[in-house]
Image (cartoon, rainbow, N blue to C red; front, side):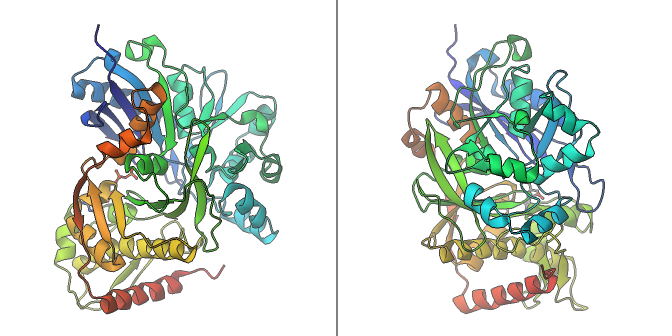
Length: 497
Ligand code: ADP
C-alpha cells in the first residue's frame, strides 16, 4: 500500500483549466493545463460552455497525475480554486446546464445594476456583502438566467434547478451529483451572502428576485466537501478545500497576517490585502471580502479588482495582431521610445475598482506619427502598473498602511520588464515566489488543512519562498508625472455615470 501523501489542486481559471499535483511540502510534482473557448455573443457579453470546463477538468486531472507519475491512490485530498462570480444554473435531475455560464467579465446586466443603484439599494448591498452594485457579481447574472431561460424561474421555485459558481458546478459533477455546496469565499462574491452573519440574505434574495431553493450550502474553505465516486479517477478522492481563485492565491502567497498583500496578474488583476478578523468597510470603492474561513473562523480582506490586465495583452495578440505570443510584449516594450507618453486604458468591459464604470470603454491616447507597436505594447503593460497604483492608493485611503512589498503571481509575472516597471511605477518592492502557481498551491494547501496533511497556516508559511525581488529605481517625480498622465487618460474614457 502506498500512502496518500500528495495533494491535487484543480485551478479552473477564466481562460484555462489546470490541475497540479503537490507533495506534502508544497512542491509541484506534475501539472496539466488546457485553454478553452471564450464566447462573445454580443459586445460586452462573455460566456463559457460548462461541458468544456467539465471535460477539461477531468482531462487535466488525469494529465497532472500522469505528469507526477503517481496513481490516484497517492492523492490524500483534492482542492478546488475557481474563477469567481461566473454563474450557471443546472437541472438537478440530469445535471445539464440550462444555459452557458455567464462569466464575471460579462456586462449584460449593467442597466439593471444602474436602476437598482438609482433606487438607492447600493448601501444595503455594501453593508451586507461588502460589494458594490456591479454586473461583475453573480446576483444579477442569476436573475438574468432566471428571467431569460424559458421556464427557469418556475422550475427554480419548484426546486428542480441548482445554482452554482464554477466551484459548485465542479463539486456537483465531481461528487456524481451528491453534493451541492460552496465555500464562504465564493459565496461572498454572489452579492446575496451576508459576510458578517455568514448566511444567505433573504432581503437581498428578494431584491434580486432569486428563490432560495437554488442555493448551495456554504461551508468552510477547508471543509469536508464529499468525495469523487471510485469510477471517476479509479479510487474515491476526498475534496477538502475550496476557495475562489484570488482567495486561494492569497493562501498560496501565505498572506496570513493583517497588512500582507498579494496581487495576481492574469486576465484581470486582483489585489487582496489581509485585514485579519476585521471586515473593513471601504469608502474608496474597494470591496470587503472573505479571504478564507477556516474551521469556522473568518479572515477578511480588502480587494481591488481590475477587469483587464493580461486581457490587454491578449488583445494585442488577437485583436491588433502586433504580437503572436504574450511573451513578445516584453521585448516590444523594451524597444519603446521612453519619451512618448502613450496611454492605453483597457476598459474593454468597463472599469473596475476604484472607478466601477460599467459603461466606460477603452482608448489609446497620446499617439503621434512616431508611435507604433512598441509604444502600444508598453502602454498595455504600463496600464497594469497604473491600475495597481489606483488600487494601492485606495487601500491606503481606507486607512491601510501602504504595503512595502507586493507579492505577485499570475501568468503576467513571467515578464521581467513588467515586474521592474511595476516596482518603479508603484514605488514599492515586488516579490515573485518560487511557486508561481499560487492559486493552485493555495487550493492544495486548503485541501491539506482539510484532510490533516498540514496542521496549520504556519506549515504553509514555511513552504513559501521568494524567487527574487524587484526594487524601485524610478525617481518619484517621474513616477508621479506618468501617473498624472494615466489619471487624465482614465478621466477621458469615463462614461459620466
Ligand atoms: P487566467 O488565470 O486569468 O486565465 P493566467 O494567470 O494564466 O490567466 O495568465 C494569462 C494571462 O497572462 C493572459 O492574458 C496572457 O496574455 C498574459 N501573459 C502571459 N505571459 C505574459 C507575458 N510574458 N507578458 C505579458 N502578459 C503575459
